[in-house]
Length: 104
Image (cartoon, rainbow, N blue to C red; front, top):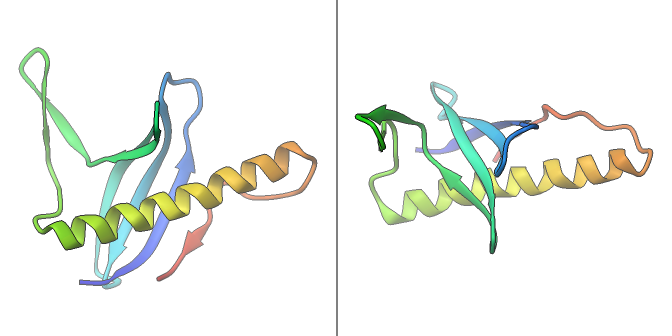
C-alpha cells in the first residue's frame, strides 16, 4: 500500500493540536482526521478516534505493522514540517498557501 497524497490543514485556537491531515492510499482510499499535536519534545501524530465512555478513546483507523506505522507517521510529520515552514515564511511577509498537496 502506497501513500499517494498527504493533505494537511492548520488548526488554530487549540492548546496543542496544530494540524489535521488526510492521507490517501493507492489513489483509492483515504483516512481523514489524523491529528498532529505539538508536544514537549516535538510534534506527534494521533490516529482518528472516537470517544468510548467518559474518558476513554479508541482509534477507528490505525496501521497494523510497525513498518507501515513508521511510513505513515513520517509522511504526515514531513508534510507538517513543510506547513510550519510555509507559515513561518508567511509571517515574514512571503506569500504561501496553507492547504497543499504532496505526493510520495
